[in-house]
Amino acid sequence: MKALVRFLKGFLALILALIALLYITDYEYIIKGVRVVYMTGHTTAFIDDHVYFENETIAKSEAPWEWPKHKGYNTVEATETLKQTNEALGTVAFAIIKNDSLWYENYAEGYGPSSQTNSFSMAKSITTALLGKAIKDGYIKSLDQPIGDFFDKYKDDKTTVGDLSSMASGLDWEESYKSPFSVTARAYYDDDLAETILAQEVVDTPGAGFRYLSGNTQLLGMIIQEATGKSLSEYLEESFWQPLGMQEDALWQIDDKENRLAKSYCCIASNALDFARFGRLFKNDGKWNGQQILDSAFVAKATVARFQGEPYGYGFWISDHMDKHIFVMRGILGQYVITIPEDDLIIVRLGHQLGSRQAGDDFTSDFYKYVEEAYAMISN
Image 1 (spheres, rainbow, N blue to C red):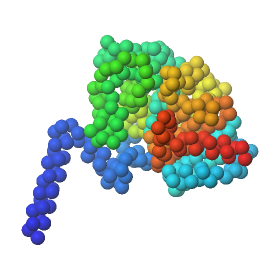
Image 2 (cartoon, rainbow, N blue to C red; image 1 turned 90 degrees about the vertical axis):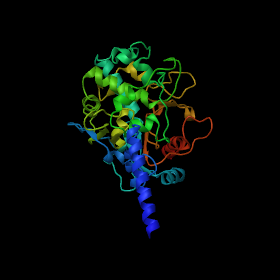
Image 3 (cartoon, helix red, strand yellow; image 1 turned 180 degrees about the vertical axis):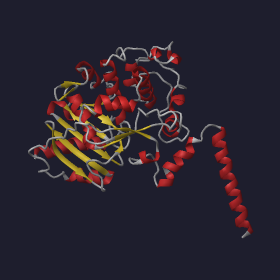
Image 4 (cartoon, one colour; image 1 turned 45 degrees about the horizontal axis):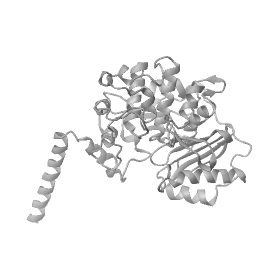
């Protein structure tokens, strides 16, 4: 018994020493990560984790617009391959929108049309949409405006806002999702996001090539906020949530109660059919029900690859699967808004996991299945 007591005391002393060390070395955010992830039974970030963070509310539209039902709405069942994929990867929402009408929708695990789940990096596309709106509104001059115009730290660098949006900034960000000591983990769990971002240096030639870094979009969000004088959630609400007729409130995670800086690289909690509206907006050249929300030239540039051979435009992933031109909003756990303009088609998937990636592929296997099986369903 005495040995057990000594062991427990020693173990407790070790834990307290480790906690003290995390605070001393400025890694105390790891404690929050452990509490949010492992103490809730998870091993990584998850689709419902927004309840463990501070959030800003983005109010639903005062003039809500409902997706019209296609004449073939839910008349075709999911293919066996799609059913198996959705079950294996924990899909909670899957929708197909054809000719701007809701053709198919299905929900699982108690989730429904109004359920809020984390967008993860689909928010990068939305932040780029905010960039386009800020340019149209005259707050930002163009994609070529230097970021040094907004933050003195970068006044001697040539990085532009367009470089941030297209993942070509040259920042020394480490895009690591497994290490608790990475800047990516710090950005997600720490309470001073601006301090983390403004510690980044430009170490590579900006505008020279593609390198996916979440820090790019976070800095871009900070620039949009600086340029407009409005919080990102406020600007998102007035620029898109209201005019696009969003049917539900959304939440945007912020770093803490004091700073209230939105995580612009991730973390908008909304639902499948409201997320899908961004696919419709960009598919229709920035126009929404007769109103030009975004400049069509900006939309055209955002939805094609900036660098030849790379799968990224400005805020959107790009694919030529099935010889189609496809632009994609994408999140780390297989969140997708897949838009195929030539066939007037939008596919939305939200869920817990994504598939495996084969060597040489720009997307994981689930993405290709969602596209292929949606076409198989429509052909039936």
